[in-house]
Image (tube, helix red, strand yellow):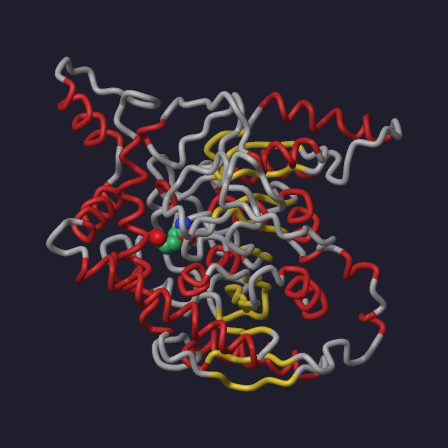
Length: 456
Ligand code: GLN
């Protein structure tokens, strides 16, 4: 009840949601009664969940933030959504996002701009900005997002909530609208590490509808709740933390750097040892990411042709039907990415761009692997700055891309990463949140969540 009241009251200012379901609102109001009846309703009984609009929900609008899918209601649930519902969760609505996940502010939505709850003149980050803002404003308890190059971690940092990007393949992508299939992963937002762990428990696991989903065993990610670690004064004793040197230097906001250094001190007080480590290929991640993500997107987005789903232009000739449907339905950033991707994949340029970017990806994966053989986890800021002003980056795509420097490498390497709030910098009326990114080796979510829980 409390969440629903707040949702009704705050939504006109924040605009996190593209769609709020009246039916599930009513269900949510009844759930207290059901819970009181004592029936076993699952680990997420009655928990209100926001779902990013690029994750399919049966019978509920799912547009991926794009006009080209306006009015589309999928006949099925994404696997992650199905699992949430089976655990008793209530999907309250679909959250705003940059069109098909391409953007870092949620201003790239085909429908509306979402405000950052900490300062409504600022963006919530993106592309999962609606999901982060909704949890931050306590409009719902937890939410799902997707992370191709930072879209869960960056908005988590901007909105002061916990954001988890699982290992590639940990969560089924069935029902997630593909952006860059080799990088995409469904992640989650919560007000605490515990909430994120409980959601991960529910959504993880192999799925026969996604051949890239992993068969790696799913441990109990919330098992740290049972440990007595937190009674010790140095629960992180023996933990080796590598601070990525390339992420705390030039071009990073001084307030962000001091929050990250304070976080490192806090980890030391908890018993960890902090060492600076260098990842020489770090700065190559950004160009490699934008080449690879655009290339994959140019192929994945060819399905939006006005024939199978969504908006169809009213013309008779087939090629103009494709052309006009796409011209009207897709926004400028998406069109630019498709052009860049098509260019990078074209015969004369393939070796110079796509192939080269793949080689860089291999280098990056190797440098993370080496660093994580010496260290238990790596830490860095999640973003080089606090939340941008609305409008600040819209006319400067390169500056917008540059803000993704801290997060894209992790997707190129397929690793899990957890963002936890770690401080504030000046701005807004109450300060602007800063997030610490903790990166682990593949399938080390359990460890990251335990450390995050002790840290927060
Ligand atoms: N901002 C990045 C991009 O525009 C990452 C987005 C994402 O993770 N979906 O591609």
